[in-house]
Structures are given as C-alpha cells and as structure tokens.
Image 1: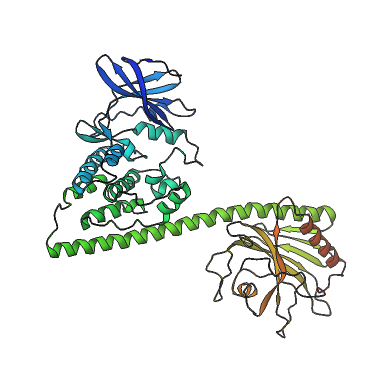
Image 2 (image 1 turned 30 degrees about the horizontal axis):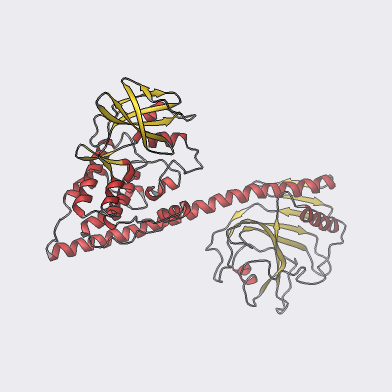
Length: 491
C-alpha cells in the first residue's frame, strides 16, 4: 500500500493510478496548483540508482524530471503530465497516420536521439514511451529502460526488451547502441504508416525469429525515399543503419508530392538497392545465428562426451588395472591389454555441407567421434570392430544427443573389410548408408542413444568386447547387420 503523501524536494499528494508496467507504477500527483505524474519504481536488488536518475536537461524532446527522490521501497520520478502518448494518438486515429503527421513524430524523436548519441541509449523505444508535451513528441522512461536492463537476469527478456520493437542485437543479448534505438524508430515508422508492425509476432519466440531472420513486407503507397529510409533503419546489421542526424536530415527531404518521372525512377532504383542490401543483411544475420546455434550445440556435445568418455575409461581401468593407458591432446585415449587396443578418438565438429556429393540425411549432425577396438589380424584377416559416435537430432527433430552406430559394406558387393562393423565419419559414405535406397554402404548397428547417467549397457558391452579381444576370442559377428538398424533414424 502506497502512502497518499510524497515528500521530495516538494510535497506531493498522490491521486489515482493511471498506468504501470513491469518496472513501475504511475500515479497522478499534485503540489498545490501543479498537477504532474509520479512514477514509482521498486528498488530492485542490484540496480544502481544512477541508472534511473539520468540528467538530460540539455536534450531536446525528452520528458523532464521536475522532482525525484525516495519513498519507502521506491524510487520516485515526478514528470509533467503529457497531453497523450503516441499509442493513444495512433489508436484514436484508427491505427495509422498520414505521412506528414508520421514525419512530424519521427523528426522530434530523431532530434532527441541526435542529442543523446554517445551519452545514453534508450533501449525501449515504443509508442507508449513517446509522449506529446508542449507541442512536441518527447521520449520518456530513459532511466526506467536502463534500470530494467540492470535488474533483469541475462537469460530472460521479460522486462529487458519490448518484443515488437527489439533490434536483432537485443535478442542476442549484445550491447545496445544508438543503432538499437534507430531500429525501433524503423518499427515505429512502419507501424505509423502501415497501421501494423513489420513483424507481427505474436509470441516472444516468433518475434525473436522474425527480428533475426525475416524481411519486413514492403511499405505500400509511400514515397520511395521514405520507404527506403524505413528499410535502412530495419537492417539486421546495426552498423548499416543510418545515424539519428542523417535520418533527421533525410526526413526533411521526403517529398510531400510525387517527383518528376526521372527522379521518381531513380528513387525507385535506390529503394530496390536498399531492399537488396536488407536481404543481404538478413542472410548474414541468419548465418550468424545458425553458426551461434551450432557452436552452442558443439559445446554441449563436448561436455556430455567428456562424461561418456570418463565413465567408460574409468570402468575399464578399474576392472583391468594392468591395462596400459595413454591419453592424447584433444581428449582421445587408448587402453592396451595383451594384444588388444581400445581407442576413443577426440571430437570433430561437423558442418552441414560435409556430406559429399550424396543427398544428406534428414537429421543434423553437429559433432562426431569413434570407438575403435583392434586386434592383430587373425587367419580370417579380421582386425576387430569400430563404432561411430554422432551427436545430432538423429531420432527427433531438434532433440540433440550422442548416438552410437556402426556400418557395413553391402553383402551384394564382393568386397571385404578388415574391421566389421566399422565406424564412418558423417560424409558421403555414411550418407549412402542412411539413404532410403540401396547403396554400397549400410548400417550394421541401430542408432542407439547414449544417455549420460545410464550408460551401463554401453560400458558393459565394450568392456566385454575388450576382454574377448585381450583373450584372443573376439571374432567376426555371426551375422550382419549385427542388430537390426531399420527405423532407428529419421528419414
């Protein structure tokens, strides 16, 4: 419960609540004859008071702070009461504005951003934070957005950004810059003219995908010079967006009436070039996001592989302490007992374009390794067996784990290998094996998930094979494929 009296530099009486959000409540207040608005912001742990109390007295078109201080568990900001917000103005106009009105809003916003450049980044520009005050459209909630940034955990986006207006770099949790605010200006400009946002969401994950990877639909019925400006503001790459001063100057030159035919054609050509660059920026963003995704999956593969490797090796060494052990750089190791050698390779990361000239499988592989058990060549030219370990979404799309499998040469081909079954790296030969038709290579072992914490069967099986190899009893499997592999991977 908030007291009805505030004592800051001046005494204020709190009236009705008129708004609020994740980082503050807004009330009408008055001090004598002056009516104003108070924003009360909870003192969140870890937040710096200086983030909230930003002195912007020399900046154009920013809602001023006329009083401030503390009250109970809140920071308090007193501001003049605005005539309306841009959101209310848009709603009253039916959701869109004509070009002159939209340009008036954008010019005032750009004047503020030009004065702020190099000093403060708003981070949360949206129609609710743009207020009509003393004949100008002014920015509000600078401190609030910075405060939200400081008090929100890095792995959440609930309050740190507004999904419809958040630039691609915000979704990547990268540092916000002046270009971040320019992106939001592009979304505002599009919304004011089109009556809808360039990226519709509506769910948070859909907004994330759209801001990172989608191109905005073309703005219809607007001068080419203006639509090109909006496209530039919405470039995925922050470095390619115009600065506030540049944007403000170009808004002055947006024609209110059609240009001559030659100039109009040139503006259309410029718009086409801007659109092409926007497509290139989107492709770069998409590639970057995919690279980041695969890097994160590769790190996860490394961590889980280390646990698989450790559990297998420790179990065998514990059961056969006389085995000779060798560990190599990169995490590979080998164990030798008698004439048998068991070797686990290090991890290699796999690129989606490394399947050779064959059709790639339906699943994705991020990393791979192999487990190799060798014996001296026997009278049947048999040298042991090896299995592949692949980290991918082998059985369920988007669900990544380590899988064990092995391969064989088709019995229709008069060719014999010294190891059977054998490991293959994900490449053209392996792609043939998991193909839907007949080919030279086939799977000899089902894709079997290796679940960290439940590796008993896997460890025991390889320990048994190692014991057989050390005793000279490891033989070629009685039938191939050794276990029925059909249906163990996605097609």
